Image 1 (cartoon, helix red, strand yellow):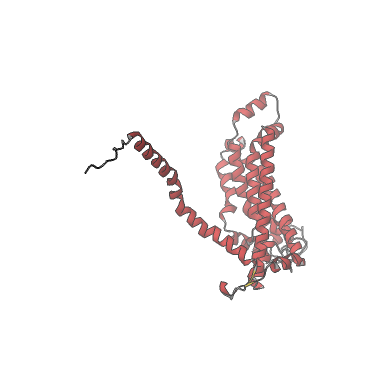
Image 2: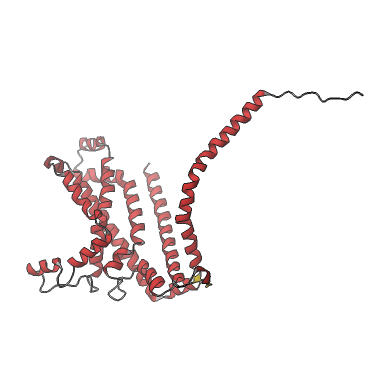
Length: 323
């Protein structure tokens, strides 16, 4: 019996090598993602899961004494209660103006001035530049809790060193309870924040100043530009990207800050210094309304997200126009 056999197919060795190369490329492209996967998993567990759970919690009713399984669906009631609460408007104003706006502007102005002074040649000639930079860093080394406790003692109306000094100099007849009266409490709280957080601004701006090429100042001097003109036409334009980052980081960190106001005044006198962060804590853990506190957190996050997007777009637009 005759059987037909199929002709043997010839294998192109180039095709095999090509497939091996393609497989190697695919493996090389996957390798960075595989190496990053553990870190991404940890970040998701630490950041993404709490964010998602907080969003879900904002639409539920739950107390700190209940398990998550006991939560009941509330829909948008938590947000309605938040926006109809008269205290929310006052807390939002305090957060945006007193806590964030005033302190960020003051830190930026004083931080830029100190950074310029610390970079000045006169400190180098006197050989005290290192000492001056170390002294500027001291407040940043102090934990916020310790800083607030120290300032509360110094600002005490009876035994505080500030009041005793002012009375001994004849500037006051009696001590002023800076943290207990509405006319002075926000100035005192802002002073604490500026004192503790100013070194960060100084360090970042000082690094920006060191990155400015000296040739630009030499060219400005050849054009007979004075120091003020050099500052306006050389220093500030070069520092604009750094200032953008400083403003963005300080606004976000300050807007969400809880420690300074709560430890200094507890939101008082009464609710005069209540901010959104302290309102969140009071609602969730004093009023036993975790859903209401989560709703405040969602609103704060949304406000900061909008600010970040708008500010960065505006900064990018300015940078493109300059180029």
